[in-house]
Image (cartoon, rainbow, N blue to C red; front, side, top):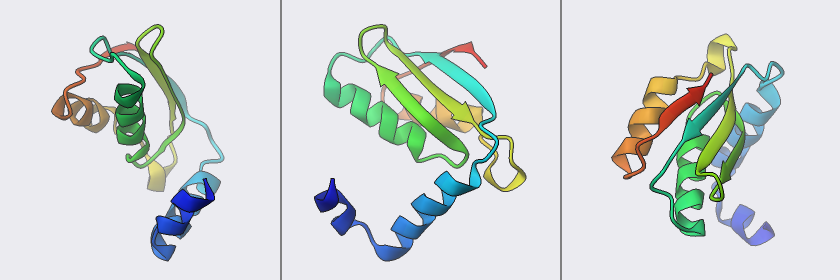
Length: 101
């Protein structure tokens, strides 16, 4: 874990910390069904893609039931855009279905 943090640029690390700290309101819990995930590498790609979007937190991706869940913030500066997340997942080959939001 420390090795991975060393590779981050200082500004990138600060922005990650700031996003995590700013999300005092957890927002809406979103659950996606993602049927094409077949391995741990797939779940890792899906998780990183979701985490790369502003306003997402508490991302969990489970291979066992092919689901991803995360909190979508409602804070003005960190508002989560579910449509963009869905498009990003489709782009990397994992078209999701929104189960709940």
